[in-house]
Length: 109
Image (cartoon, rainbow, N blue to C red; front, side):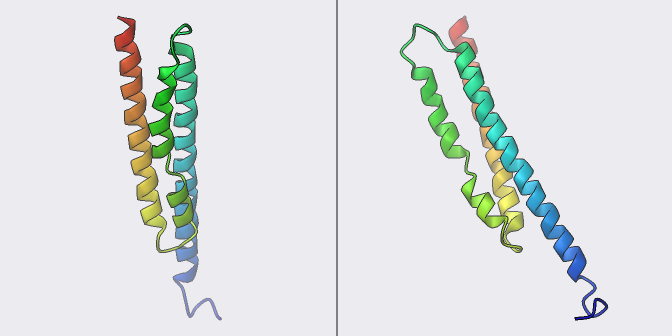
């Protein structure tokens, strides 16, 4: 096909590529928050405790939700949905991180 027949083809491809990169960045941020929570709990957990501090990682692992946005990043029409889901995951991960840090701060008093 001649490029002049479909002038919107290249911008659509560029938009899809930008959305895919944005989804990958959002997913990487989710993983970094999850790993940061590991480090935070390891540094603030009671060394002589029963280890129940580590239970907080279970909801974080469930919220991590990497599979749906990653699957949606492959589909051109579903990429905005994948980006929205990844953004919601980031917000939930940050909220849980703050909740866990608040719980540790309350235990230190």
